[in-house]
Amino acid sequence: MEKKTHKFIISGGGTGGHIFPAVSIANALKAKEPDAEILFVGAEGRMEMEKVPQAGYKIVGLPVVGLNRKNPLQWITFAWKFFSSKRTAKKIVKDFAPDAVIGVGGYASAPTLDAASSLGIPTFLQEQNSFAGKANKMLAKKARKICVAYEGMERFFPKDRIILTGNPVRQNLADVPYRDAKALEAFGLDPAKKTLLIIGGSLGARTVNESVIGGLEKLKNAGIQVIWQTGKYYFESAKAEADKANNPLMNCTAFVKNMDQAYAVADLVISRAGASSISELCLLHKPCILVPSPNVAEDHQTKNALALSTKNAAILVKDADANSQLIDCAISTINDDNKLSNLAENIAKLEEKDSAARIADIILKEID
Image 1 (cartoon, rainbow, N blue to C red):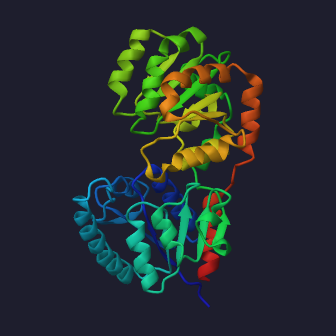
Image 2 (image 1 turned 90 degrees about the vertical axis):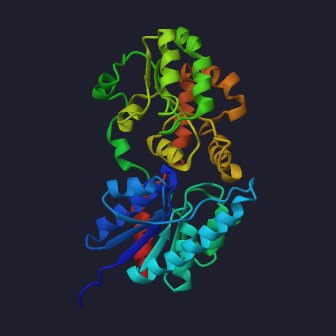
């Protein structure tokens, strides 16, 4: 009997933290079933509409938007677009006739998975954060399996459907060994000096950048090499301040293209506490200081960071305290080899390997 070729819809996006796991799951499904058909469903005007085709997959968009709870006047727009998206999603799901629909979070996942459930198609969730969002909590009631990255998620989901898989991350990041000679050369770094990597995401993190600007003189006096990814919105002003400080050990850039090399040369990383960033730091066993963004739903980045800091697997600096504490904390930590070693040892315990492949196996097993 000829084996059936499966069809999958993967829905969600809005941020890299949702898009990258989605693409990783698609790649894992294709690796196991090269003839599988995969369609993405995203939100119109969001970054998935650009990033998914770049990864080689077809995507269709829904008019769905987020709900701005502070502005009641926008509730009408939200409601109209949500119900319009539900109708569109139902048509997409009916026409494509998938064997399973996978939601990764983001605006588009709710109407798409809701449509699939109403048509009797198996649905699956991948929750990246340690604190589940409202949409995923609602969708979990009908999901076959819920793949999570943190322990204790039975607070939000039916316990019998939860599987701890970790978050799919860029596995190739681990291909470059620590302090690789080519990586050091790429950034013009001295192998005898410690290196601090500061990343605030592709768009940047205002508080992190302000903290670095306020601490430029301290960093210069400490003699630490710095790779500072400012994000495109903050690059011009940050670069001007960095030039004024005249620190030859400061490498200021809008965006780090070769993150595998940047991670390889870093002795300590300052980062926001998005789920994908944390999963990458766990994969690489990197000592890190996490500065959770306060501008996210349910304050989930603080909860992500606490999941590590309470196990001494990361240092948590609150966004409100960053200007006064972040750079001092980074300098004292990077110069304390015992502290670095303990942080690396503890974050390594939280690593989940081959997450995307495990999620693909779970989906295929369930639908077969």
